Image 1 (cartoon, rainbow, N blue to C red):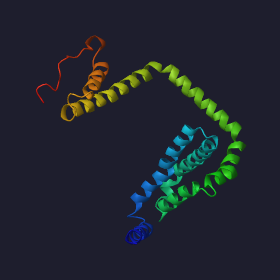
Image 2 (image 1 turned 180 degrees about the vertical axis):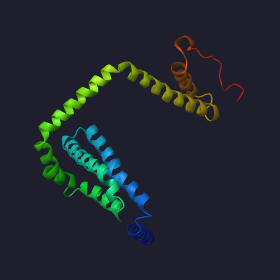
Image 3 (image 1 turned 60 degrees about the vertical axis):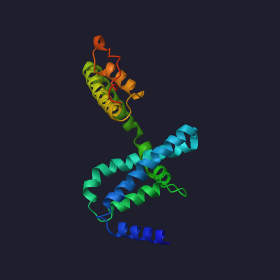
Image 4 (image 1 turned 135 degrees about the vertical axis):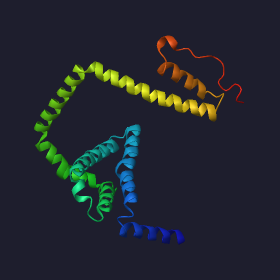
Amino acid sequence: MASSAISRELGMRLLCSPGSSSIFVRAASVAFGLGFPFYLSFKALEKKCQEDQEQWLVYWSVYACFNLVEKFTDKLISWFPFYHHAKLAFLMWLQLPNNYGVKYLYFNYVRHFLVKHQARLDRIVDASRNDMNNFVTAHHREIQAIGNVVHKFVMSGNALMLAFMARFNICGSSAYRTVEETVRFTLYTPSDRSLPEDDPCEGHA
C-alpha cells in the first residue's frame, strides 16, 4: 500500500511538474524509444523469427521518420508545456501490443509516401552513394591515415587503462599480459616490439 501510494505520488509530481521532471521524462523517452527496441531487435535477430524482425523493421522505419521530423521541429515546439511528456506517450503508443501504433503509421502514411516518391528517392540515394564512393576513392590514403591515428589513440587509451588496473588492482594476473600485448602492437614500432620479461609487480607484493 505504501509503495503504491508513493508511486502514485511520484507519478503525479512528474505529470504536473514538466520543468522539474524533464530529465526523468527524457531518460524514459530514450529507454522506450531506443533502449527497449534495440534489445528486442537483437532478440528477434537471434531467434531468427521473421515476424518479429518485420515488426522491428517497421518500428525503426517509423522511428527514423519521427526522428527526422523532430530534428527540424524540436527547437520550435520543445518549449511547449508537456512536450516531452507527449513525446514519451507517443513512443509508448508506438509499441502497444494491442494495436502497435507503428503498424498504423507505417501502412497508412509512411509506406504510401515512400511508394509514391520511390523513384525520386532511389535516384537521390544512388547519386549520394556514387559521390561518397568517389570521395573515398579519391582520398583513400588520407582516410586510412586518419583511421590509423584514431585506432592507435583508442588502443593507447585501452592500454593505459589496463596498465592502471594491473598495477593497482590485479598485479600478477593475466591482465598484465593483455597490457603487454596491447602496448607492443600499438605504441611501439615493429623493430621495438619486445618488452622486458621481468614481472612488473615484483617488489610490490
